[in-house]
Length: 458
Image 1 (spheres, rainbow, N blue to C red):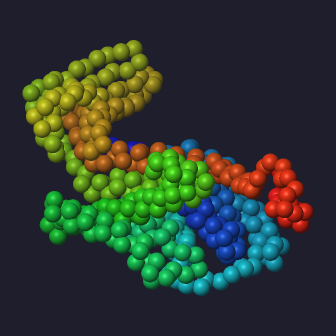
Image 2: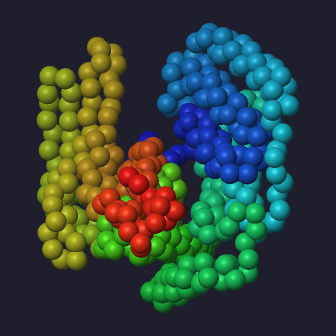
Image 3: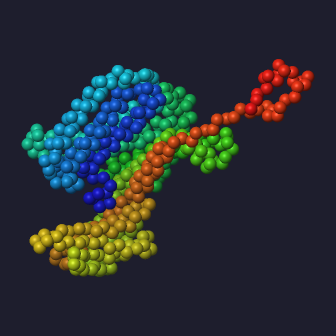
């Protein structure tokens, strides 16, 4: 990402990669309704069509120069070919849909709003709302230029204002969806399945507020702090629900096989890899949400740092050990050496750097090399922004971004869960019929021929 320490800047090309992921994720959820209940066939077909068309649209945005993006390639006339292809592809989708519409009739109807089908339906609707929001914001400069004659660009505040509540609702559905039964969920089942997640959410919310996460005390940051509190609270409930599902299933397997709880859990996952791989993916998404929620507590500081100057940010104390200038055949470099202390203890030295490459006789290109110290708690970024022309001293900007590492941990868990879901289920061996007596039965008064005929043979 371009923003130091960031992970998503709502750039048009980034948005282009997000939109087909949203519709594809919606399809992966709703196709389960088609598999289990024969529902939403029309819906699923159009989700597939939309995912393909949005992928082509993303390529168009990247290649044609239709929108301004730092990630896009140079503008070229290839855009006309992509426009034509999108029109042709859409026409093919329409023809295919109408040609096969008789095979796409639903076999069942939604019977209750409190059911797994309804949770999938709401999940789909929310994902499509998020996709439309991103699409609208991405294409708004093009639409505004067409209507008003001037481009109006929307920035991250627009996307965050709309998509943060959407993301929190999706997190909520991630927790409650697997706990609901197909067709209809009884009140007794709701009480049994939701009591532990509800307790976990209440304890988490109270604990966070006791330890200082109080939105009403944060003034201008009240909204972002409130969203973080909600995200942490919902995450606790979802994790509890997922763990409860694993333990409940593993308990049944343990009763059947006599294995320990760990072996029973492994066997449980192997028997239904799609279901429990999906739970692992959900767990990874929750971990990612925790990392994103930490963004409400980002800090940054900037100052001129001469030899011996110090800067404090969060628990870190940075002391300048001087700067160095070097001239190499390919570039000139300037970097500052910063000693990093945490809670009074020396941690490491960071050396943010700024290079100037010699691309030609009349052209130079600058590049900033970030120095990073990453932990599970926070990432510390240091940037060499340049020098004060009056004093010649380096200007250092420091970012402290909490929980960033959790996003990448969550991504790794999602990849692992996807791999598990793709593994075939463990096929159970058929139970052999137990023979009452494998030895030949001798004729005797106790075994007359009529009785002998009923004795099972190998």
